[in-house]
Image (cartoon, rainbow, N blue to C red; front, side, top):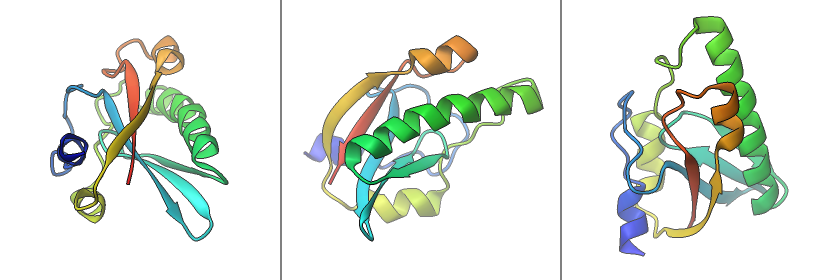
Length: 123
């Protein structure tokens, strides 16, 4: 559990965090009857009625967001990690790694995307 918590502490909003041990880190949390999947290494989130739906929506939306970002800027260099205040909001919870999924869909539209998988954490 401590290892998961450490993994979510983030890099203070730096634009380059590397892939690390877990790949793209995403916290899945309940809030007001919905579930949210919040990225840390990429500032992006999605919601759903269940944790699985939030995860599915995160992956689908991430593909679209990366594709649009690449189309607008011609590069992924402008993708940023979540801001420090977002990371701070989550970092003191006790996290457990719950599942991992391939980011093959993202890498098909943007082979230079630096993460090969997403690692989900829940409190």
